[in-house]
Length: 77
Image (tube, rainbow, N blue to C red; front, top):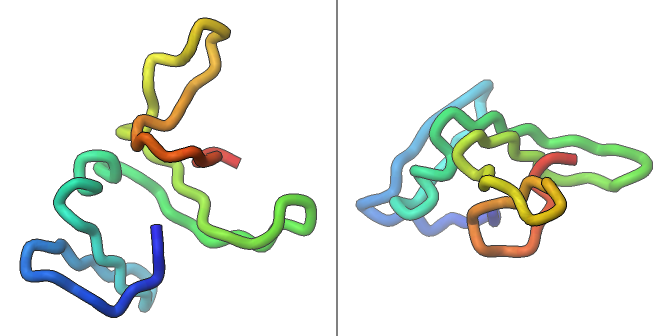
């Protein structure tokens, strides 16, 4: 996720509460049904929190859920 002014013809644009969100084709499947929020948590810092059922995997050998996007991130703070 990044702040960017470059919007391509194939990107999807949504607006929620006055905020424009642009999603590329690859990310669209991962964000189906997602809730995106911006939080300022004194303990964890400020940033975007994504709760996306499409980004959850089956989990690892220890039963931990992992993001399916291939990046190293903590999508559920």
